[in-house]
Length: 355
Image 1 (cartoon, rainbow, N blue to C red):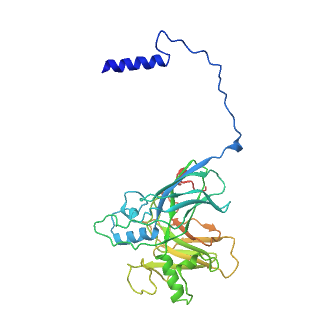
Image 2 (tube, rainbow, N blue to C red):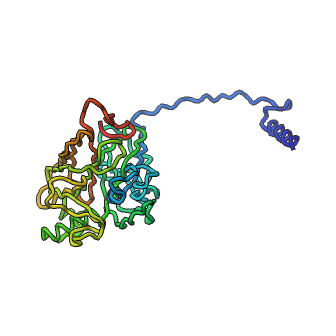
């Protein structure tokens, strides 16, 4: 066998004209490659943007089901059951360009574990991009884990959702981005029921996408200070907006009365609250006047706790009203400067946040 291999190798070498005495060397080449220069304006650099698609209502319901002594960390990360129960597979994800006023490039479809990637978003360091989920996808139908077993999370039809986190694509690879999907039978259903029953304003969840009825609908979710992937709810947070009405949201297991006000997923408007006990609120701007250029959102931690280094600090946000889509403003608290820095380092560059 080895003889045949050697013979085949010898024949192959002779055919290439490089290993037999009978062969002749090829003529010297007269071709000399030259570098081709292109002007900078002709280049179109792109950035790969990737992250996770997730359902914040399902994530919160999993935390609540796990209880106050839960041993599972509430991180957005593969392998953590709280995230796996809220990962949205089959979500259609787009990068929205606020300068052009429309999405750029084809959409990405999230994997069953929620991962997605947009490989060619234009690279630029001035105006940011934003992630939009168009309303497709679902969380796992079979509950991930458990011991003890958790109650199934009611499925939902997702609303088109704009994640209000700017992405500055000056870097070549932007990771850990979030494509949030807000459901139609959770927080928004609770607000629609409240408007209908308490305020006497018949409202369907689909009305929140009607620009003749609402100029802006934003779900605000305040998160605990700490690791960048931590999504534990921040309690006792006061939320203000320069336009629109703030509605604070509470929760109890689905089926707890009153059925006329509680949503399918257990959320309800608390119209006597002065802070968000779960860090959750909705800001509604009805279409009863000219829209403001921007709406400024301010979150204030009203709790003092020296051990937890509270009160925490939330960055201010200002954004123009965006009708026909649900805005999701997820803000993670930061520790106030102190003598012992804890998680006070800035986010890594590949997060691609504005400086």
